[in-house]
Structures are given as structure tokens and as C-alpha cells.
Length: 171
Image 1 (cartoon, rainbow, N blue to C red):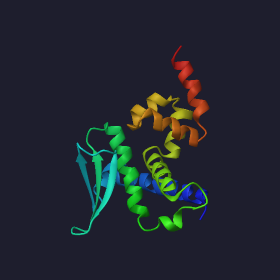
Image 2: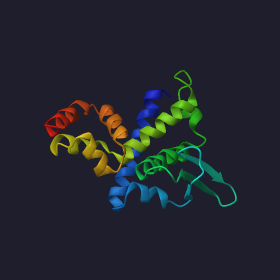
Image 3: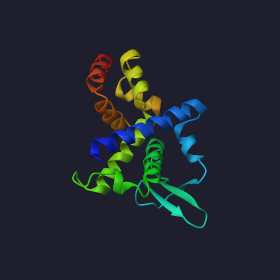
Image 4: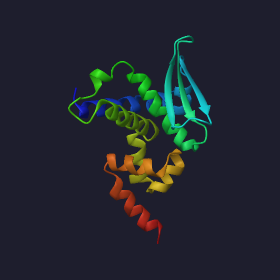
């Protein structure tokens, strides 16, 4: 499978999670955190933002989040780590060994998944094109980091539009 296909799959999966959360009228975070077989823990001593562990005894995926990270970072990390759960044992088939390395592709795909779930395409387009939000307003509204908003806007080719909004708002 090509890396481009893997990116598209990650985006579609993220979009499906966002749609399901909307259908159930819950946040994507609540949806994932309350799935059967998923346990979310926060750890003050975790040296990384998050990690995923399979607990064989309880037949549960444990997603650990660094408790000292900001809430927006924890939200992103939870979804990033959930993508690793989804991809468990399928990385060999999902990621193209000719492009970068498999581990790097897995991390990038998890970021795409999390970004798409937290910032769905149609919502981003509406906020930018119709409600004239700039990146800072989107970050506050969707409770994600401004850096992640910037990356998502770039992915969606909406960056130039928000730049215009930011210049207008700064006058």
C-alpha cells in the first residue's frame, strides 16, 4: 500500500470517529475513552505525551497520558494513541517501506487521524469560510493547540484564508 493511501485511510478513520461522536451527541474524547476494551490513565511521571499498552490479563488497551500536559495536548494524544490501537498488527500492510520508515509513518498517520477527528474538514471549512474564524479562534473553539490548527489548515489548503482573517482582526 502506498503512503498516500495510508494517509487517506487515517483521515477517513478520523472522520468516521468524528461523525459517530456527532451522531451520538458526545465528544470524540468521550466516545474513545468509553469504548469497551479501552482504559485511559493519566500519569504524572510519564516521560512522553502518551503511550499504549495491551493488558493481557484484563484484555484491555491502556492509553496512558502525561498528566502534566495541557488538556488540549491530552485530547490530541488520546486520539493519536487510539490510532495505534486501531492499527495494531496491521502496520506491515499499511505503511510503505519505500517511504521513510514504518515507525515514522505510523506516527504521522496517528497525527492525521487525531487532527481529522478533532478538526473535521467540513467544520474547519465552515469556521474559516463562513464564520471567518482565524487560527486562534479555531484553537479556542475546538480546544486544540494553535500549532495543530495551523497544520490542519495547511492540510486543507485553508491557511491563506485564515491569514486574511488574522490581518483583519489585528487592525
